Image 1 (cartoon, rainbow, N blue to C red):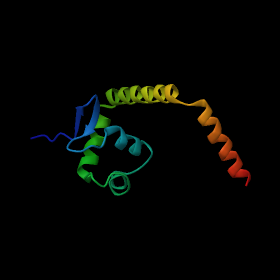
Image 2 (cartoon, rainbow, N blue to C red; image 1 turned 90 degrees about the horizontal axis):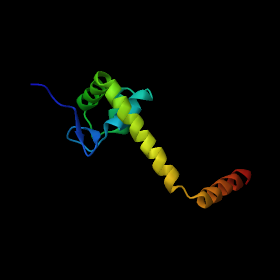
Image 3 (cartoon, rainbow, N blue to C red; image 1 turned 180 degrees about the vertical axis):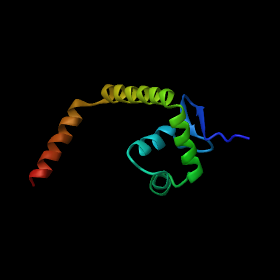
Length: 102
C-alpha cells in the first residue's frame, strides 16, 4: 500500500493531513534547509516522514510543481501590485530613512 504525502485541494498542493502547503516545504528545501531542519525549525507539526515524502513528490513531479509555483508567484505579485498604496509606501520609506539617520 502506497502512502500519499501530498494532496491537491483548494486549488493548491498540501502536505496530506496538514494545513502546510507544499510550496512552503519546497521553498525551504530550495533555500538549502535539510528535511531535519525543515521539521525542527520551520514546520514542527510535520513528521520527518511527511517532509521527505513532500520533497520526493516535488522531485518526482518537478515540472508540474514548478509550473504551479510560478503561477502562484505571478498571482501573488499581481495582487501585491494591485493593492499597493503608493502614499503609504512613501511614508514608510521616509520613516525608515529617518530612523537610519537617527
